[in-house]
Image (tube, rainbow, N blue to C red; front, side):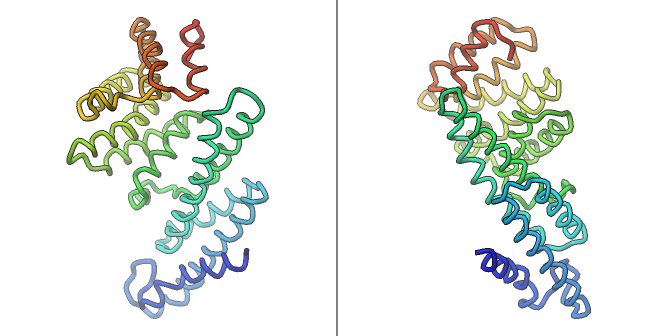
Amino acid sequence: MKRALWVGMGVLALTPLIGGCATNDSGPSFGNLGRNFADDWTGARSFDRASSDWYHGDLKSIQAAGRALDKRIQGGSRASLNIAQAWITARMVDAAINEMNAQYLEAGPARDEARKESGKAYRAALAFLPTEPQKWHSFDPQTLNSLGYFLADRGSKRTDFEIAEKLTKLSLDLLPERNSVERYVRANGPGDSHAWALFRLGRTAEALQQQADVIATLGDDGGPKNPPSADVIYHWGAICRVAGRENSARDAFKYALTQNPSVELREILEANLSGSLV
């Protein structure tokens, strides 16, 4: 299996060369072909090694592979950027499966384990995110949003929240809003995530305005049959509470309970209504 993956990624690295142009966008300079081949083949090997490390749970080695790949991306390797995107996509699938399991499990060891596994997958994905933000423009906006929301919701330090703010803002900028469906998707995804990132950064006034805009958009474009989700309303309540709007916060928590929240969110909402902090 490992050999097959290595060969497959090697083919990916070779594709630009077969087409007759260098992968660093320097044009069809045959003097660069050997260097680009070695660079991109090494990138494929990074993916291969990281995949093996992932199945063995070695996050430190994955982070080291991500740093090595990032250097090649900074040098202009398009194939290395493709490899990073492929890796992040694969880990996002792992994260989504475990995240869904965690949300609908009762409190206990099983939920804790699912939450731990989803966190590992997100961190592994982030290890391959290029350090140069301009490179993020080639990523799928929803992928950027998911990574940003993870950092906003489960990050532990200010740098996590700062990256979350940048990722969710870029996702917002990249997603179109040409019709009601696109506006709804944009607000429900990165719009809500961006408000949460601002909130975690302590920029409460900005977060309050952003989430108010999100709820207004969802109300206008979703209509009565598609009201804002329990998560969106919970975020509004949490932001209101910190902003000193306690009555609005409690109203939000109560309303969110009527919007089919996950088992985990229901516990959080009930805890907030009983007087616990956000």
